[in-house]
Length: 113
Image (cartoon, rainbow, N blue to C red; front, side):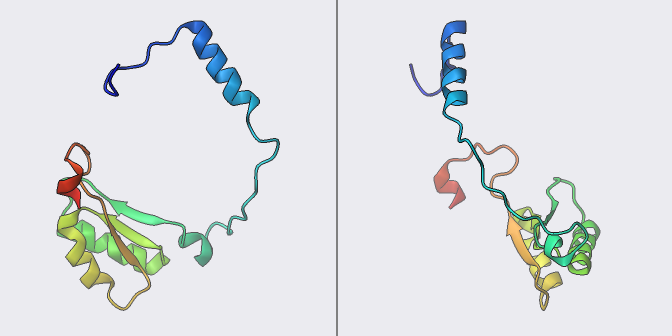
């Protein structure tokens, strides 16, 4: 079987797999503090994102304006908008993130790096 072929498990195999996973769950999970919604610390958890293919310059500018106003951690955009965002956000603490090969994800790794 190649990695491209789907797995076909019997009901018994699925049941055994699920039961095994369930029986090996940890007894306790760590807890992580969450900042209060509306706080600057909470805003630092947000990547303000606009990835649609037909985004306009005005929409990108608004995205950056909102990210600066609310002090989000980053804006996340397509590659063709990165330089505009960098210019818009210069002097702020907001970073710029970019997706690669979004939305298909079908390009080979060499084309992405």
